[in-house]
Image (cartoon, rainbow, N blue to C red; front, side, top):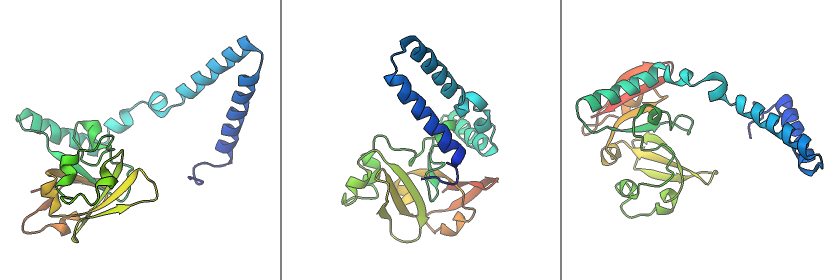
Length: 205
């Protein structure tokens, strides 16, 4: 699936690991097998990125700190936290805002919030698309809102009409696109608040 990343060395390492694991499973050498399995598990655990590198690389990102600042300002004022949308033609950053305390409409929907989706799908024509575990991809559009199936069964793409931002009660948008203000209408204003290294935060008014 990712040939540019999964090159020969990684393939060789995985093949060697699987071969050794298989040998150990069928090996009669119980004590030896236990010791090697423990060493293998320690090696695997120690090389997981959060353990190997820590999570500061995430929490020190300026865009993340800005999201946290917005959330903390709302909390300090006694306001309800605004809902966020990640506008992006993929799911790579959809869970990013929730790491900073920002409730995100299209973070991974382990359980669907049916009342929310009903607001933009009153006839429930797309019920089977969001009534499940789903990675929701949202892109803004001037056209009517459209739900689109994708090759990956746990993915659903929504081309969201800008007017439906209000129906979903979205207060902020995180995006890799720097020109979302063009979708502003008389009823919905999209205002760029912040930008850094290709990430943009917008306020929905």
